[in-house]
Image 1 (cartoon, rainbow, N blue to C red):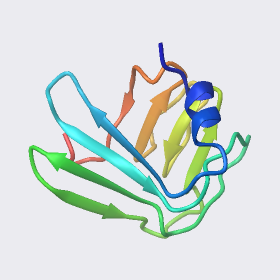
Image 2 (cartoon, rainbow, N blue to C red):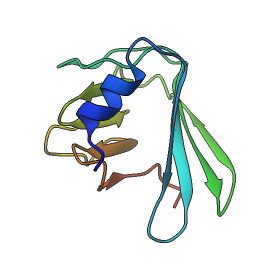
Image 3 (cartoon, helix red, strand yellow):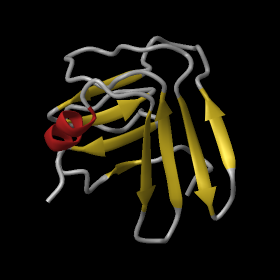
Length: 109
């Protein structure tokens, strides 16, 4: 099965990174990160990150610039625009350590 640790290992040193998710309701959405993802205990990145939906509608959600919480990625999960490590709520986009549960951008699903 997939895991955040495996994903980080597979994309190490590569950029940009696009993460696509298809949920149980056939909604397709994701995240674009223009720099290499890495395992890090704190948020990092810049305002070039964005969230998007492809189906059932196309929408782009650029970084708001309201906070410095661009990317948080480590073995416990992956998030843009908020927190993970056991609490994905508040993130704009998050996947847990098993890449099985998470949250999506409002308006994407």
